[in-house]
Amino acid sequence: MNGHAGAPQPTWGRVLSLLWFPFFFAAVMSLVYVAGISHPEPRAVHLGVLHEAPAVVPHGVEIEQVSGLDGVRADELAGVYDSATGTLYVSSAGSGTRADYLTAVLHPAHTVDLVPTASGDVTGVGLFFYGLPLLLVGMITSFMMLQFGMWPMRRKIVTIAATGAFTSVFSYGVAVWRDVIPADWRLLVYGFLLTQAIGWITTALPRFVKQFTMPVAMTLVLLLGLPTAGGTVNADMMPAVLRWLHNVLPFGQFIEVARSSAYFGGHGLARPLGILIGWVVVAAALLAWAARPVRRPAAVAEEKPGQTLHGTVRTTSGVPVAGATVLTLDDDGRELVRTTTGADGAYRAGNVRPGLHHLVVTAAHHEPEIVTIGVHEHHAGSSRDITLIDWDDPAGTLTPQEVDERRSLVG
Image 1 (cartoon, helix red, strand yellow):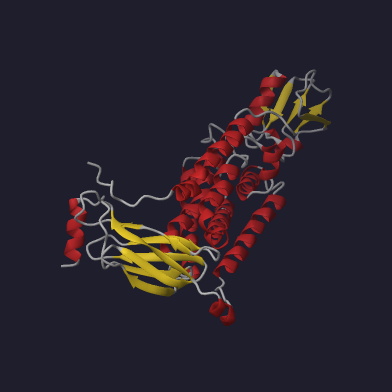
Image 2 (cartoon, rainbow, N blue to C red):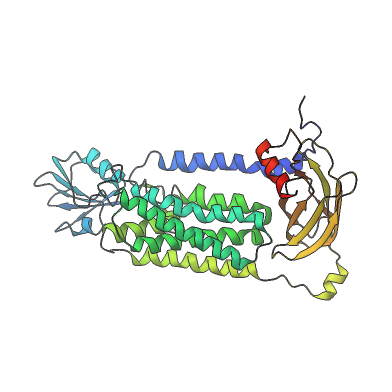
């Protein structure tokens, strides 16, 4: 027998409002990852030539006459081809994919890597994987803190700073230890800036996009930020749209800054560093705006009473939980309404103003639960059923040891 048969089920409208994103995620990921970067080809690759240009130049490769190899050493040119000796000069630190492509299509007699990657970066994508945890930690931290809606913004900022600092130091230490990146201490600073920009933005999002926080954050960070970073496929081998995103999004700027600082002596550092700092400033402004208390004129509050939150509290087996306490908090952690469920497990919290709120539900011998709910001005009320884990419920997820530990705490 299915122990969940009697459990409350969401409406189809609720299901569709949540499950649209997996379809969107799959479609965009296929277009961007598979169609966009799985088959890289030159779009705006600059190749310098000494003496004569190669007989065959692929479309998307722009030729310019040069007198030396400084453009490769400064990451201003993808490579330099010397027709007198049949030698191609490249920098794998600038892009291993691009260097391999030019070698494959130009068929030089010799290929010289003027700026190789660190000895431990045998695939040429070390910077990308070094930066990946830096990109994700801020977003993951903000998602976890959605369960702590009653926390003040100051505490959230401190938490993001702590996880960002730890990740910056730990990832740098591991990458240097494995010789995946050069030992450049400035990468610690750039990495910390990235963690704070992403963490602050995704923490501020709930105030602006409500229940769409996770789709918006994942689209910005994963769907668009990862493939356009330039860590695996350089920007000059991406389609125009993805190349534009690379020049704007924070992860792409971090890769450019880290590459310039670690391998090219700071050449071309100013522009991407300025944009990365700009993201930090924008993120700070969004966070400050989101932290502002919502003030409404008293007259308006009297004319427009708040909405009613209602629903039913049940166990994982669908049994109503009577006497459970349902505490309604606003997004700043202030208590608004405290109510108790009836014999049928139902609760009602009246006169709740529109905005993002958090329901803290507790009951004796049950695991507490915190859920976030958006209250809309033009809806008659917001319904949200809540499931608690009963310590004695075999349909729950607690182990016998965990149950014994909890019972020992309450005597």
